Length: 615
Image (cartoon, rainbow, N blue to C red; front, side, top):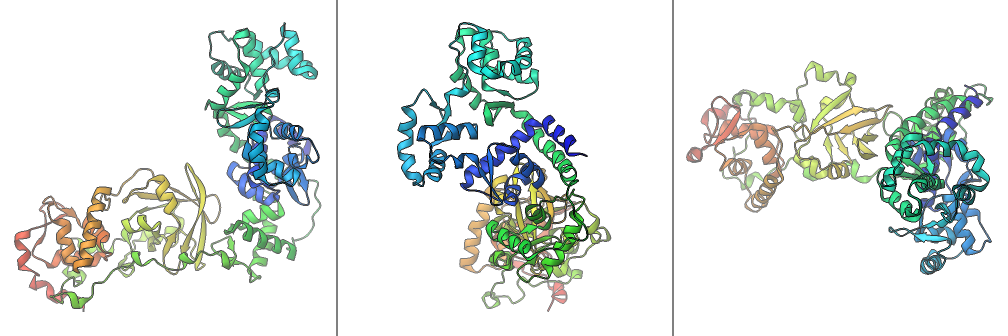
């Protein structure tokens, strides 16, 4: 593809490029100072599908941005030595959308070397006293009156000249399209705007939309109220320059930008000259170190290549750079590999991912507190009743203290070929924001490094990073996702592979594992039992009696185990052994539910089980 054809495609995808530039402007505005392309790619491009080459190209051609010593800034931050009113007006013109006083204050502070607090105090009054230039929106943003249609005209021709002046001829084709759209005077202005945008299938400025509606509503049309109504109507998205886009069309932006990024990789590299293998310089490595330090979290090799070298995975030269950079990072002691392609600085590794929280480990009661030394004694498989041994060895419910019990079937041993895995969420892991790294999942996740940092994508949630400690067999960093998604105990989590190494997709499709699911009210009851168990030194047997008391319908073995684990972290074999060893526990005929017969509590342990006790 030639550069000329790429430019043609850019023109065809103008709304997507416009959205990209607005997203970059928002990032720079909130950041408060200039940023490197790599930082913009990381914070903006990754979220909406734009790579480094596309971002650099669009910013170069956009008056909103200016390059400063390998960094990019908002052009409005270069408006030095202007009167305040003129600087405010030009800031709004360049940003192209309403701004808060706080945003104005930050920008004026940059221009005039004064504190933002000074402007935060004086700007509300200053702006309010200039109604000919500015107006305030209900959500305390400030906008320009010049964005609104000037209806002080005796005829349509005069109105067009007052509002569009030197662009009248250029806009004639669009105006003719708008005149053909069937509108009625009775329509709400926002409904008319929706109709117009759908009819022309392109973004339209506030003034063009207003012109089309004014033609129908005449003096009844209120330009400012129309603008305010558009701002609060979820059907519309405001682009810079006062152009409106249907909000539903924003969803297609990512796809368009991904396609443009792929084209940019080819078209913008055709004129570059580069022979032989790529040599990574010390400056490159220093920049990577600086980037890791500034972002304060690990980065994938693909992200670093895009940030520092401005090549994305679709680039023809990506493979050569990737190989060279991987070898250079491995040879540099400053960097640590945490996964298949993710790198970090050792100082950025969170201390809590280096160990297992005590609350996840089995709790053992001091045996001197037990009146019977065989209380809670574990039995060999042969001593476990019914199919309890199968549940003890079931790899799906592996947790700390029972790793040695796991028996993997042939299909689970082939985890490296699986596209996804499902993990039932146990109570203690829900509480701690963790997951047990089960043996069944060892080939599904990267386990070649002691620690692995994975980038996780989840529907309706920003991408985030989790840590896997392959030595301790624990996944950290899920607490916020659990809370935001309101994931319940017993949820079957679905984890799939992402688009590249160290990328994963995490979701919950609503499926519940009823065998371990616990309702919040029941958890509260069990937590009260936990307090009593600690105070009165209950054995696991005592806990099981309390858990089953009042439930003549009984519980499945896994439900009993799940409830006991809220009261005290206990391996499955201990629970299975107690069910098999005490006369008071029995399996309900024709079911897999165990019940408590309180009349048999005094009978104690079965003497026939003594020979199966594990010494």
